[in-house]
Length: 353
Image (cartoon, rainbow, N blue to C red):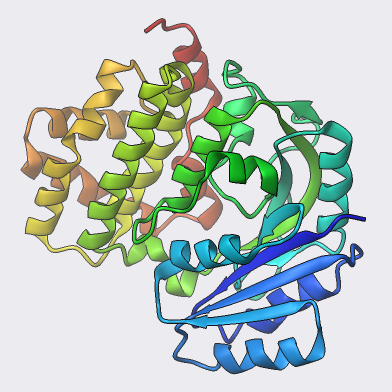
């Protein structure tokens, strides 16, 4: 059986790291190369990595000065020797048969890369009731960049619920853009645009941990939004240069609401910083008109209108009201608010651009 390289970037995750590594070394598929990239951790993560390397000869640990998540993943890509590549974030977990399931699937379908289902878990490891992709709605199928009804939803931005053919990544000469947020989205959308075949399997292969006590949504700084602005510009230009704006509209519908609610929820921004972020990202929100993407909620519509009209004081008033409301909502409802609903996509499908 062919070798799969599993890349695990690590930075200050001592509370979750052993659980993550155990989920890899206990896989039913045994021919693994496990590359653990310690990205300058200052807690006990480095020692944990070395401890496991002594226990399992499949594990190779790379210690490096901090380069960020993308830099750690790039180190993994540079040293990978497997026929296939998978990624695991060090606070998450693989399902026991994740590698075996994905290997058999990509071998059977001959895809450039394949996508699996995943499920959220709470900080304590408790699984949510249902997976992200409903099994009765999304069965096994081959994605298409011209398919705006199913493929856009399954083609999420993450790399960790996927298996990539290394020869495909090598042909693209692709790496992760370093020191920018949304590095997954840049990587996966580029792969999707350039791929010849991408397939989806409904089996759950990954457990994605929701860390609310250290939620990035509540601690996003101006530096984060400045980075997001650059990342989203790269993604937009990539779709535009490849004449795939039709698919980009659906990516935009998801990402626009996602980042807007991060902005609303953040408690780390000063008032003037908020105004500067809105000014810098005005181009992005103006795209909602240019490419005809309707908004989910009327409140979001009012926010976009005020941004486009340069009325940032009014924008902040709307955002403050929504922030107060969201503090009282259950996590499932908050997550649902950040995603377009079926009516939004139906409205988009009826619009030509």
